[in-house]
Length: 477
Ligand SMILES: [Zn+2]
Image (cartoon, rainbow, N blue to C red):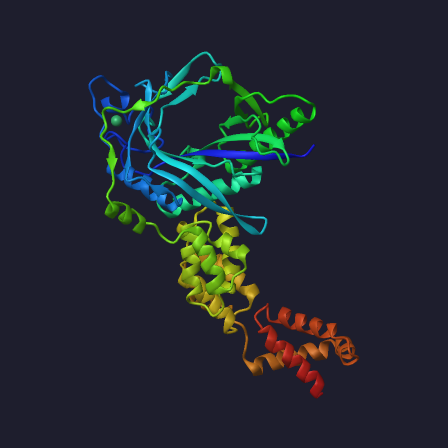
């Protein structure tokens, strides 16, 4: 029996504010445990939360960037649960009136664009972090993360494959990074993902029983965790078994999902309105101002790169992976004759360099102007593409202008007609067999002579010029 997979994602994103959502504690990752706390986030009796205006602004900006309708009026609620990561024994969240609803994210899959619905975006505070001892005999709690502002982005069950789930996550990250809402570092937990997955017989409308997977802490693990669970459910259903509603944890080491709790243990959070915070009332001007903060987003940039520069869709998607990379490309493309050459150099040698060095484009030791200059020097015949690769490496290492490096190292192509003619004469005289072959119609023999010529000049001869010159000289003999 063929099954259709149905996936919905809940993505949690830490907002890049200076301070926490309801107090003045610093919002920073990596500080010594329990050093970024105060009576408010520790939930001492009698304290009152105050909403951080920056957190609200980033949340609204994110909701708009995810194409949500923003509520003019929303409120906070208490989500009650008892666990050591929450000193108040409740989390301030939003329940029935979130800041944003009915949005969507577009992903590029199978050569087309697919729209994934966003049910809601809401603001909430983060919980603390438990560090379990390796022996399992005790746990330590770090409350630095308590009260860090989060948005939760809930998708519609529109995702059909684990690959689509990964692409959706990547697109959400890209959008939020473009908007400077969050750094979205999965390895630091500022972007986290829980997934619901169920299978149903192809053609059936009703959803099957779903399981929830937590702890997928990288894009690769999101896809792999879902692939594992998809397989597990398909095998169980094919064998006539039933899926039980469970919460599972992806275990990277053993590459399988592990049971955390079953439906019987499901929490009843007893949500009720947060009495210590006023309703959030937004004016049309406020919402318009947040909308104005949104830059050109990845999907629009991809579309523009194809339209404006005539790039293939693949190039456009690679070059828009981050805002900084896209801006780098835009800057180079504006200075060169052919944007595709800018794309080729960035996607090839430059991205390879970033991968090897682990750098981001922002850290690279070569300005867009320097790359454009290098491309210009190939275009005007000063250097060959082969030499340009060496020069590029040197620019990246030394940060000097390509023109300066070429001068210093004497790398300019020999385009001096007389000098080349003398060398060509020697090559022709030293290789009578190739000359004979070429005269007999073997085109390849010309290549061998040009190769000799390049060898004699250590790659610095202008190849087009040499090609023409040798052909002419043999013909003229
Ligand atoms: Zn605090």
